[in-house]
Amino acid sequence: MLLVFALQSELRSRLGWAVVRAIYRGLPDFQRARLEEMGLGPFLRLDELTPDVALIQALKERWDPECHAFLLPWDHMIPTLEDVARITGLRVDGQAVTGVTYTSYQELAERLLGLDVTRERSSLIPRMKLQASLGVVSARHQTGESQADYMARMTEDARAALAEEEGVAADRDLRRFLILVIGKLILGTRGDSVSCRCLPLLEDLSSVGSYAWGAALLAHLFDSLGTSSRETGVAGFFPLLQVWAYHHLPSLGHGEPRRAGAVPLLRH
Image 1 (cartoon, rainbow, N blue to C red):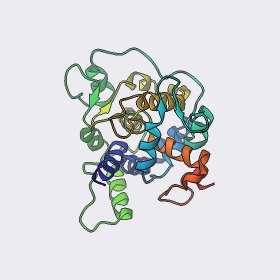
Image 2 (image 1 turned 120 degrees about the horizontal axis):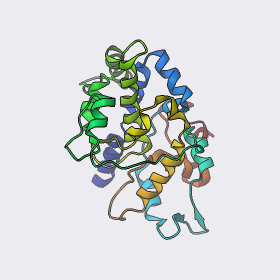
Image 3 (image 1 turned 30 degrees about the horizontal axis):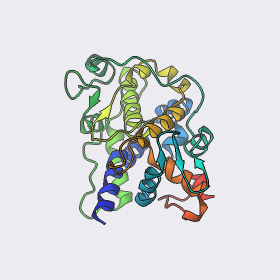
Image 4 (image 1 turned 90 degrees about the horizontal axis):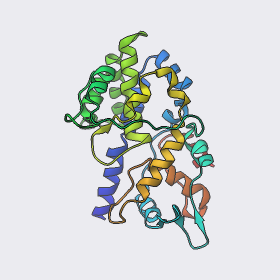
């Protein structure tokens, strides 16, 4: 039981869904419009899904690394790009999310984000510094605070910190938010820091929407499933696995979205 609670806490903290949603709500209208043009709007409007820890771990244990699929009693099965598009709304065609790996991302982080990496030869940004730069200094519930009040407080904090007009400051805010979304949701990794390896792809904000972020999410998830079975959980976007399993394996039951209509495919 302690392992289940620990894994559930790990999944929640790694995902950072509530923080991302609060900042998204705090963005000015023109910034949300830019995210819509990039094709990220549907993904960012998904609500938090309560982790089904037992299901996620059971799927991981049935992952066959040789054929990159789940080995089930009747056959092999995997989520497809169509599943990704239907569940997340992310684009699965377009330019590949790839590029050159830098020895250090310090210059890029300073120039595009106004932030420092954790150490000289690193691609990681401290999560707390990134959140604080977007107005969310603390993401902890206050004593006696309801979920609605908690979200409203973080949203107002973000709104007060974000640039209200288009310009250099607004572009920096958007890149900071995108790195948080990519580093904690789309290409989430274990650990508290946020990777900025995709930062070169965000230099030209007008091209962000041309990348196949959904395909990258699925590839990253498959890579995570290939880790040692001794490691609990997965480093990728686990809600995709959860909704996919409920849809294709209906005998498992159904999920628990926190807001009605948040995940249309799951609701069916």
